[in-house]
Image 1: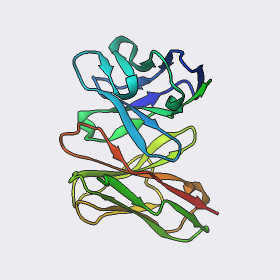
Image 2: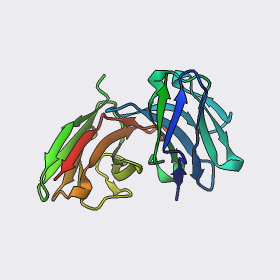
Image 3: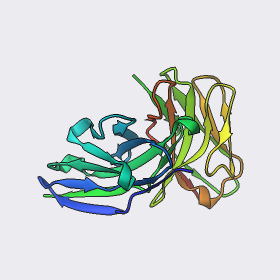
Image 4: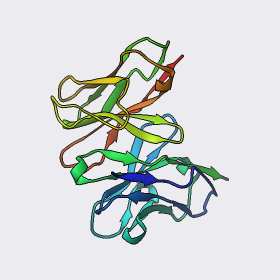
Length: 114
Length: 113
């Protein structure tokens, strides 16, 4: 079965600093990988996704993520964080043989200090 | 462009009461899902419906029932609410070509006293 680990429950960064949120997954073959963002009181919004091909994927709001098969990781990065990026971030994994169901990580809460 | 609409947004119940969470999507999606979100646990799948007329259990189905009323609507019912069901519930949907990408509603916050 698939599983997702986000090792960091909370991360605090200064505005303008770079950001990396970690995600490790467990799955035998190449999964579908996603990052979602949730602002307070809102539903989840897709930031980016990886299915195949180029292992560095670009998303909305200046985010990018890199798929590393050897490390079973899909870390999210942003070169310069803005105060509006404060939110909770979820990594998720899916697989074709599981239909369209996704398994989510526990989430990482990002705080941005000015 | 409504997307996925959930009602109600907030509800307080007493232990043993029943209620139904409603979800409707206007994107002509085949698949619909109910997740619950609890602090430190991410989102866990309760039930899903791959297509109209079918429903299947997810990771945490106990204490819940669902109905796929038609292609647009997918409801979640708590027959006898328990404090452990205090949570934020999200409905989501996707289509055949979305390859796993989910479209979420804004959530329903349920408190069981």
